[in-house]
Length: 499
Length: 98
Image (cartoon, rainbow over all chains, first blue to last red; front, side):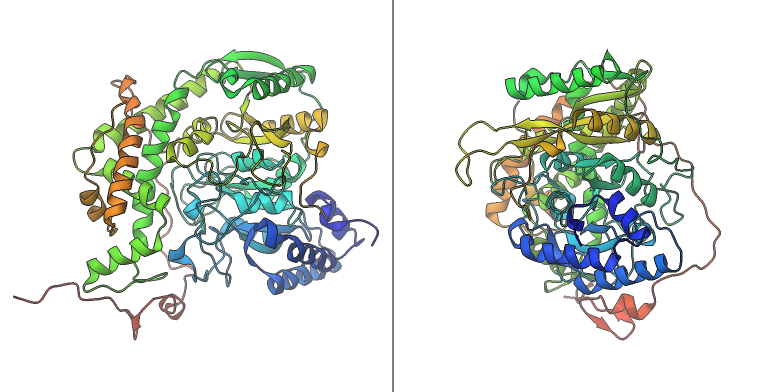
C-alpha cells in the first residue's frame, strides 16, 4: 500500500473503503499499530480496543462487499470516555467509575458505528468533563501532540490528541462550556459543537444537562460535516433532543464567503490577549473579508458576565447529576458504619478535587436561602445572553471571535481554578445560548517565555471561533470550510509526534 | 472583590462528601474566591427578565406508556458493589433503638 492510510482524513478513508481500494481491516490494523507506537507518549486513550476495532472493521468490510455505501466506512474513531460503548470500560476519567463496564451503547456512538466508523479506543478527559486542560483526569495524562510539554486542552483532550496525532480521523467530544472548541484550538483541529439538542445525549455521562452537547473533532471541516450528519438527529431516548430534520452539510460546503455578514463582538477586545495574539486575530478577521464577507461590529453587553453565569448553572446541575454516584448500584464503594458514612466515604475517595469543588459550589448555590440569589439570578442572566445574541444576529449571519484566550499552556501552569476557567471566556456565551459554534485553525504563535520541554519553543496552533444562530449548522460549516480552504493554516506545521 | 465566607463543612454534609481538615481549609478559600467572582452578577438588572432553564424551545415531551427494550435485571445487578439475591445490599439505614 503506497498511500499512508493513517494520515487520511475521514472522507478519504470512507471513499477508499467504499471503493474497495483498501479494506477497513487494513486501515484499522495500520491505525492500531500507529497507536501502539505513539500513544505511550501522547496518552490519548485510556483504553485501546484492539479486538473490538478489528471486529467492527470486519463487519464494515462485509457490508461494503454486500454493496452498501457507508458514509464513514472504516473511519477510525476515538470515543471520549464519558460515552457508553457496550462492553467497554467507561470511566468518565474518574476513580469512581474506574472499573465500570458500560452495559449499553449511547445513541450518538451507535450512529457513528452504524455509519461505518471503527472504534479504536476510549479517550481521556478531565474527570466528568470538568476542566480545560485534561489535567483533571484521575486516570491518565494526555499531552499535546504539537508540544509534549504542553496540555492538549480539555475536557475532550484525549479525543483531540488522538485526532491530531493521527490515532483517529474523528474524535467524539462533548462540550458544556467549551470542551470541544478549546482543545480543538490547542491541537490544530476542527472542533464543532452543534445546537443544543441536535445530538442525543443518551449514553453520555451527564455533567450539566442543559448545556452538554456531543460533537466531532476532526482535521478538516468536511470531516466535521460528515461526522455531524452521522451523529445528529432526533432520538426518543433523549427528551431534549430536537425533532427536526438534519440538513446535509457536507454537500453544502462553500469556497468563498460572498454575501455573508460576519459579526465581530465589540466587547471581545483582542488587544488584552497580547500583541502577537491580537495581530493574529486581526489577520483572521481581514481574511474573512478577503474571502468575500462583510464585517460588522455587534454588541454582546453581557460578555463579561458569562463566566459568573456558567459557574453557577453548570455546578448546580452537576451537583444534582452526580448525586447518583453513591456506591449502591454501580461504581466504587467504600464501606462505612451506616449508609450515610458509606456515601460520604465513597464520594470522598471517588471524586477528584475539581469535581468536589464544583459539587460543593453547586450544592451551595441550590441550598435554602441562596437559591434565588445565585441559581435563579444566573438563569435570568442566561435569558439576557440569548436575547443579546438574537439582537446581534439581526445584523449578521455568523459571529467570529477567538476560540480560547491563549495557545496551549504548560502542565501545572494554572494552579488557581479561576485562571483555568478564564480559558473558556469566549466559548461560554455561545453555550449559555445553546448556539452551534466551532473552532477552525487560524494560525500559529510561538509562546513567549521559556519552554518547559525540549529546549526551544515550538509554534502552537490557534483557533478561530465561528458561531451561528440556533439550527444554522449548515451555514456555519459552509463558511468554516471557505475560511479553512482560503487560508490553509492547519498544514503549515506538523505535530511533534509524527510517523 | 471581597471573599465570601462559606460553611464548607455544612455544604459538604449536604453534598454527602467527607472532607479532610486540609480540604475544608483549601476548598473554603477557593470557593470563597469563586463566589467573589460570581457575585458580579448582582450588577445585572434582571428585575424584568424571566429565567431560562433551557434555551432551545421545547414543550413537554410525552410518549406512550408501554414497555420498551430495557436492561435485564441480572445485567444491572451484576454491576452492583454488593448484592443479595435480587437486591442491592447497603449498610444499615435505620439506627437501632437506643
